Length: 391
Image (cartoon, rainbow, N blue to C red; front, side, top):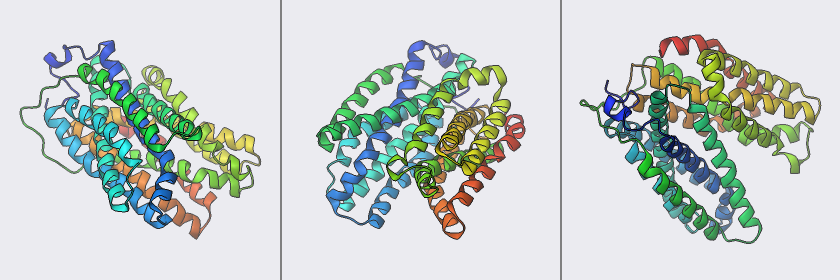
């Protein structure tokens, strides 16, 4: 086998299923979520420091996504050729060292370049940690991906909460990001020696376009990430324009969604082990679709929050299952398959909010959210095919 996920006996027997290896993998996911969330509260400070318009700021923010997407293709190839360990370490150290620079860049060009490299480090870490997680899960012989992805969500909550709290009590952006960088460097010091040491394949794979079942997996992952990005960027407006909550409470929907998704991922591995990936994709997709329906017909804030709860719980394990199926298919090396899925996912996050705005302008925001429900309906419809084609 020319893949890292299906480890050679020597690699698999070197401790892939040790508790320390699982801890290292969880911490890698935690660092990725933490790093991304630490940047989010700094955006208003960056705009004020640079004195730029919303349009210029939007272009600068796009640099992060561009860096991530470009690096993901590279990271998948390097992980397939040399193993995921060096990419995880380089990505983790990169986001830690670059984070403070985001708080002091005082020229648009400087911030754009730092965001580009920061995005590249984050994208590389994203792909490599998923490739590594697949290897650990395969060696363990039981579902673990949902738990790993739960730590990404936890990292996001911790990073946003920490930086927001520090800024609220008077810390400067530089001081807050330096503390965040130190915490991530400590975490990476724990991670590095505990990662799998994987031997490269005899025939290193070349970069290739997604093919076979990976095309389907990538498309469905794009839908899932599109939904997450839409809820992040547009849920507050949906609630406030619908008269369900005042402007100050517009973020309640995303908060409920985030907590539900994190909780759902912590229980996802047990569900997948007991019910199987096909059932989890089917039931999860249907629950998320039902959540959108409930949200769109909600007459008051209570049912609307119940809708966000259903969306978060239903969608929580869809992406981890799709990543696991990428490791099971044989049409492409898993490293390249993971890169394809991650790249499509980021494209959904980047392009999705703009597409929602376009549909909203042509019709309405509720219509745009209804289309998201239709797209999510593809998950239960394709669940059997996903599992059958990636086995």
